[in-house]
Image (cartoon, rainbow, N blue to C red; front, top):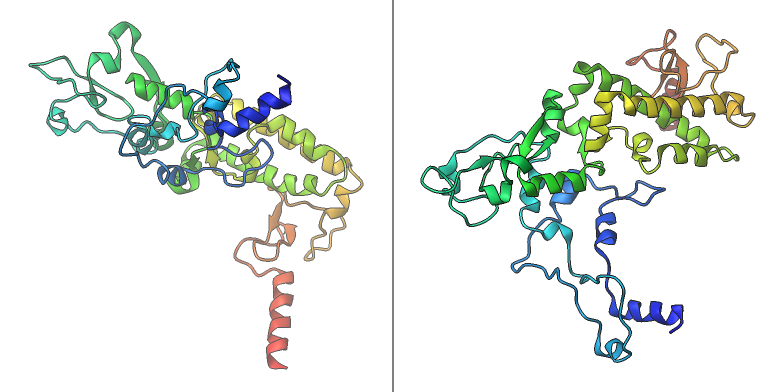
Length: 338
């Protein structure tokens, strides 16, 4: 059969692959709209009353009659990877440090299967992610035990020690580690004032956010070049407080800071040398210095959050009313009085 005929038959089956489902949790490679945060994911994790069908299914009779065999596995369109056993429970532990509750809280039953565990039964092993107790089959033998960094311990304690986890938890963490699920401004904003690496990374991401606004309006290909440097993590400059588990690990090693610094240097150099971008700078209204200033130079400028005016930080600071806002207020009062 012709390629287009085969494609038509596949469309009729209305199936989709596991990978396409996984990608549905993330944004496209060029936009962060609809990017999943932790709460959005939790709302989708209600398990069905019956287990999903994960085995390959056969094409419809009309396609089977043709004698054509597909050379890849087909998974039902109703299959959802979040419906695997324990997925919801594991997700709830991403930003929560687990504590052991005792075997009696689990009725001396493995957290992942129906095996009894405890002194009089099979030995129990504690998972560093969930704090739950597992049998050796679900946890793995001593020689095959998995060790992983725990997201909540990183976010709250900056602890990158690897803890022993169950086989299911290890698989789960390996699947979600690239997704930006952690909004630090919500979970633990104090980390920026305690951890120097995170403070520097935050500043770079704020600068890159300002720089992106200039590149987006430039007629050249500077924006595309920036995307190539950052891809597929455009959220690094669009959503400055979002982090993936992989980002947090890279923050501790200096890798993430290096990536961001390179992107900032490239973007800033382009703007300062581009005849279009340089026309979008600002002149400080207060000191009237003819030198053009930009909001991404955080070390020497202040940007008003209300009107977006830019001034030298020695001329105007947070809490003071900027000249542009003052004029706006005066016009509003004049309009109300007339």
